Length: 288
Image 1: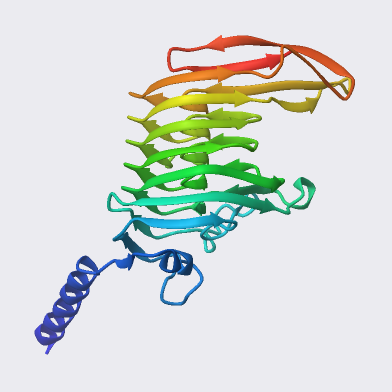
Image 2: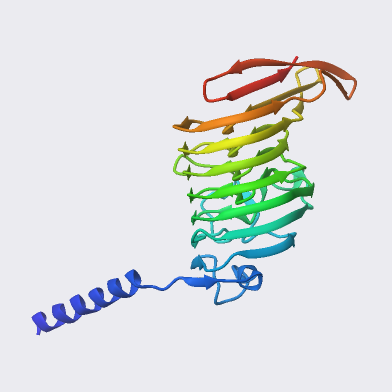
C-alpha cells in the first residue's frame, strides 16, 4: 500500500511539473488585449504573456498595475506586475500623458509611470516607440517600459521622448529599486529631461545595469531642496546610462545640457558646476 501511495504522489508531482513547464503564455495581439492586463480576470498581474503583433496604443493615461511603490510596505507586491511579458521582438507604439494626482506629503513612496507602473516580474524582448511622454502632477518615477523596476528587464529597445520628466527619469525605467533588480541588454535612443536623477537608461538604480547603450539628449533641470539656512539648493545626478547607480559594460553617447547658467528660485541664485564625471558618464551636477 505504501508503494502504491508513493507511486501516486510521484505521478501527481510529475504531472504538475510537466503542466507548469508547458504552460502556454497568453497572447497579446491588440491594444484591447494589452489594456486587459491586471484588469480582466483572465489577464492577471501574475500571468505569462507573449506579444504576437505590433501594437499601437494611441495616447495612454494609465499604466499596467499599481503605480505606487510603498516604502513602508516593501513586501506587499500584490498590486504590481508580477508576471512575465515577452515582447517577442514586436513593437508597442504610443504617446503618454499621465496624470499623477498624488501629493508628496500624502504618500510615503513613489508614484511610478510607464507602460507598466511598478514591475516586480520580467519584461523582455520588447520594443517601444513613444514620440511624447509627459505627466501632470507629482510623479516621482517616469520611464517608457516601466516607472519603477523591482524585477528584471532584458533585451528591450526604446526610442522616444520624455518631454516632462520626473524626480527619477530614464527612457527604459525611472528607477530600479533593490539589489536584485536588473536592467540588461537594453538599447535606448531619444531625448529626455528630468530633475534629480536623470539617465538615458534609468534615472536611479540600486541593482544591476549591464550591457546597455544610450544615444541622445539629456536635459536636467535640477532638484531644489532647502539647506540648513533655508536657502534652496539645486543639485542633480545626470548620466548617459544612469543618473545614479553601478553600470557594467555599457556604452553611452549623450549630449547632456544643464539649465541656464544662472537661474533664480525662491530668491536664491546659483551656477551649475560639474563636480564629478566618471568614465561611465555618471555625473553629479550641483548648484552652489
